[in-house]
Length: 329
Image (cartoon, rainbow, N blue to C red; front, side, top):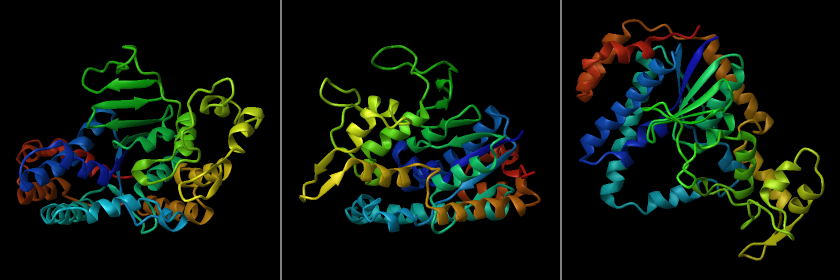
């Protein structure tokens, strides 16, 4: 049984912009440092065997659902000239980091023009059901994948999410709920995915299937919890919610079930259309059938550190190089 460290690469790299203060050079340096340090830490803490960097494509979801992530384009267009220049420099550096990982390390790199990193991470997990997986990301979308053999490491909140609960990475103790003061309950991946499909995802511009729906029902209205509990049997509570209709601000009528099914395709990382599933499987299969065999990874890391002035990484080059050198077996 192997342990794979699965890196949501863009998420890991770009979070530095929001957690680090300073000039552009400082932010760029920290983005590289954070990306490499997260891998080193996960490798050591979880006894990793191989690292898989997953990269973004344009995404098939934009063709399936036109509003998908349109809000991000709007945000980019609203950037000032200075912010646009910083954005351009970050992306140029990210491309160079990708090239380093692809060409100078033994890490698997997964990318396809139609796929998002989420698709590839889920595809790798599904292709290796008997192995352990640690996902490095702050993205809540991965909650649906949490299982006895799948964990998520959030390097910003220093939280490890497992099927048993949320744990503080530094103190190794359960994370306490701010409202109750008690340990946060273990995630329920199936319910969290159901709730996401019902409520939508504002960060990805996925609209709600039933705006204003409550978590708990009332005497006259079914809530999400009741509908979820009735999901398998498709009884009264399920149909009561799913057959509801509502009208949006443009006067268009929606049936909850139709919008829910649309969101399942968008959000459920096991429910992509058949042609997309085939692409995911092909990308993962190609990578595993053609593993890399790069030599002198440590030396190449030292040269990378010198180029980007990563002094703290170069001082512990052997520890940083170990996960980058681990070959797929």
